[in-house]
Image 1 (tube, rainbow, N blue to C red):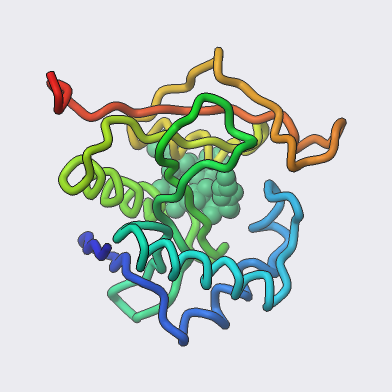
Image 2 (tube, helix red, strand yellow):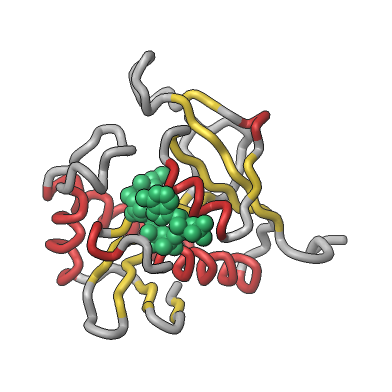
Amino acid sequence: MRKETPRLILRPWETRDRAPFAAINADPETRQYFYPRLLTKAGSDAVVDAAIVDLADDGFGFLAVERKADGALIGGAGLSCPGPEVPGGYELELGWILGRPYWRQGYATEASLACLDFVWDELEIDTVIGYTSTINAPSRRTMERIGMTYVPAADFEDTTVPAGHVLRPHVLYRIERAGRARHA
Ligand SMILES: CC(C)(COP(=O)(O)OP(=O)(O)OC[C@H]1O[C@@H](n2cnc3c(N)ncnc32)[C@H](O)[C@@H]1OP(=O)(O)O)[C@@H](O)C(=O)NCCC(=O)NCCS
């Protein structure tokens, strides 16, 4: 899976991405809505390793996001299968994490719309979900901006987060393939 947008290249992970991605995952502000909050270099590398395996196995997955203007690795975005903590048996989740210098410039929107185009064009899948902790306003706003709809009935507790923790309540958003369903 590889996608280009006006300002970004979404591509498989390369060795040169590991250090900047680890720096993003070691930033407490960027990781404030994640549990556990910070990743070690090894933990960050494990995310990259898993993405590489998914991309090889499935042909799609969580991608490195490179800025065309300067070749900077600005973060990661893409597709993955929801974990068992997400109720509903959904097939595909869209997720993202960008380094702080790259926030609020429309990059998450641009990367996400490219991933949705990939799903609608290349996969026989009609629904993509996003989910995050209820208090993650930037991520919720990003989901709304790309056309996802909040599904209040699908609110859930992320069982990988301890009971009573502020990040345990989660919200789920969904977007359907536009127009007539593929199998209609
Ligand atoms: C969530 C994240 C990817 C958004 O990236 P971004 O490139 O700044 O988002 P965009 O510039 O495309 O903006 C998308 C929408 O979110 C809004 N937004 C972005 N940051 C925001 C913030 N800090 N507070 C409120 N809204 C915010 C934008 O204003 C825009 O909405 P609008 O069209 O109504 O103006 C980025 O903040 C991030 O990486 N956060 C840390 C990682 C994270 O929490 N990932 C999700 C885990 S589930």
